[in-house]
Amino acid sequence: MDADVCLKLGVRDVIAVPVIHQDHWLGLIAVFSRQPYAFGARDLDSVDSLVQGFADRLFFAEILRMHVLTKFKLNDLRATNAPSGQN
Image (cartoon, rainbow, N blue to C red; front, top):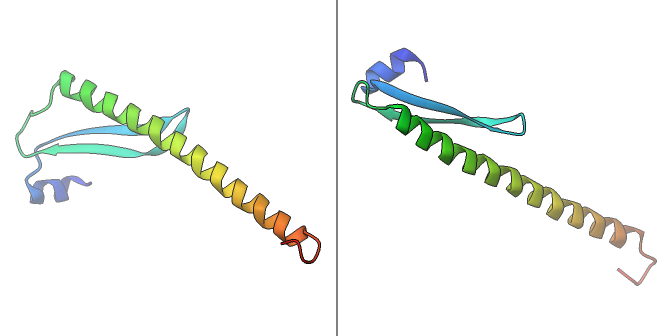
């Protein structure tokens, strides 16, 4: 979010933490406040911990998605290559 938009919305402080898992960029989580200097080191640590847990879950969800897609593709291949009358 650029500075002009933040000012128009009344945002005065931001914490932004990248969502990264094993060197793979997944996104960015940002927390906004209308109060200047609203966030401290403890807040940053809290958001960072939250983001790390989120990144781990996203990574494992992607593994599960790939596993399910692979199973569907294998089943399709089996059905396509099955002798007539067996699919």
